[in-house]
Length: 461
Image 1 (tube, rainbow, N blue to C red):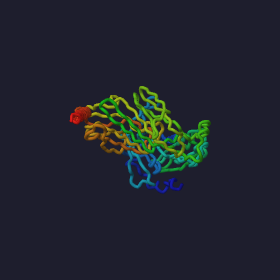
Image 2 (image 1 turned 90 degrees about the horizontal axis):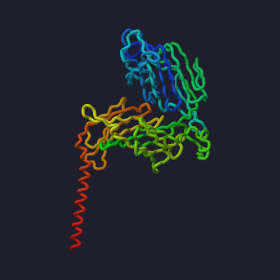
Image 3 (image 1 turned 45 degrees about the vertical axis):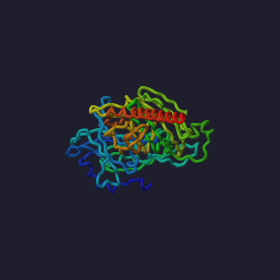
Image 4 (image 1 turned 30 degrees about the vertical axis):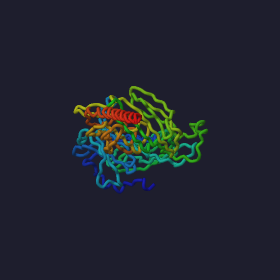
């Protein structure tokens, strides 16, 4: 517990004058933390003012080391206009380091669209997403028990700037809240806990709180997902996805009763899940879903013009700590995802991330298999990923196919955005496979003639 509670009073004096090279203050801050699923979403509305003498080009967002460890994504937008005429301008956000950061604070740098002049204010909307931040307590539960979890945070916003007024709201999935830390003023009404408003908080102020509440949402965690996208210039994309799925909530204890589970689903096994929903591209065909035993028929596919939905069930329900492995495969038309750039290069435009709804992916690997003969591959993504190149040999290949490997950890549904893979390809290479097929048939034909000739000679003798 002591390691989780931050004490910043010693460091405040050293950092009262610290900022990213200029003087800023937050006039008003409102933070709303959504705890309704196992993916924690925090929405910040900040009104920032430049109280210095020089223009300010950027500002810092501060996070505790625990949050940095579980931070999946940070986004920021500038708001202009009022009410229905509001416009949102995305801002550049990137991690940064600051010298002598107190208590190993982590930072992200938000760059303003235009420098903030002295006396000017700007309103920002910030979204950050945390994974694996809900701690089951108790850590083990029986089949008939509901799942309770801890969430640890601060009643006030951790910031390197002075905050004149701020309020924090926690939204729980149900009205069942076992306990929450009281930091006056604090109150609870139904599913919402309100902390504040607090006035004139110094930089790096921190007030640790713990919320203990019920959360029976599916804690679906994909330990590893390997998605292979194979491009064939003969007309289609073949997608194969290998999943290692687990229930990341409180571990199941005792025996499992199938009779109780089927007869009293809402009571017996309320924290488990037995159905998954995958959002697939439109116009999918040849869809299959199988595990190590074979094909599973407990699935339903709904196709549409904008998306397709595959609803399926594993062979058994998943309780805390239980695992399942399975494969999803399908094809999509090539013309919907492969295009030609103005410079003559071809590029694949597909969706990054995991198609399973409300799922955390600890490790995601996407392998884009290019046609044989492709050269100069490059990937374009809106966020940082690890990139590598491999070679894959398939039927009738001579030199092998280039594989662009993209790897990212801690992936959430917000990462489901388009990405592109560019490459050069000469159409003459499309004749390689037909040439290999013709050569193979010719070889078989010649071998058959030779066999018949030898056989006739033996008969003649």
